[in-house]
Image (cartoon, rainbow, N blue to C red; front, side):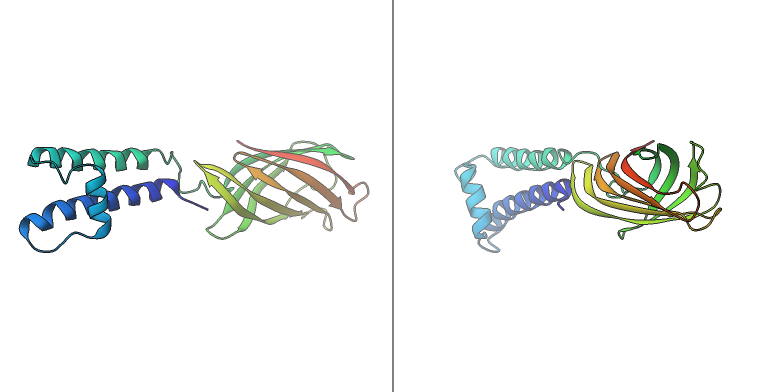
Length: 198
């Protein structure tokens, strides 16, 4: 997993630092430039620039390029690497079910759910229950996250019914398969699901 914005910013700062170091130290006679500084300075032709204004202009351009590269990282938020948020689920197959839930994920892979509400009538989940699962991030490109997802919903009332979702995350959509098993009559089945972030 790469944070392209942070990498671009670091490269830009290091690039500018070496140029500034090379430009400053030989004039003051404090030290000789490092190999990287000399290479960068020479590649830009600034070692031949007789005017200090041209050197300052070159440094300013390098720093501006570093800032532009950092800006190209895109707008990602602190929660962009998680599935935290409100979701609506549509399950199709041997049963057609829909529900809404609020998922929460800390910095680890553990996921918990609250506010589970089935919007289609089902005898399997009437009230209460628990939601636990996991999300393993496999990539984040400009805020578009991908990874594997698993969620297990255990009924509260009536007890003994379990719905398991296994799928893949692609930004604000999770798709995969589901299985339902339980002791309540009619609480078995399987099929496909889609979760959309609200």
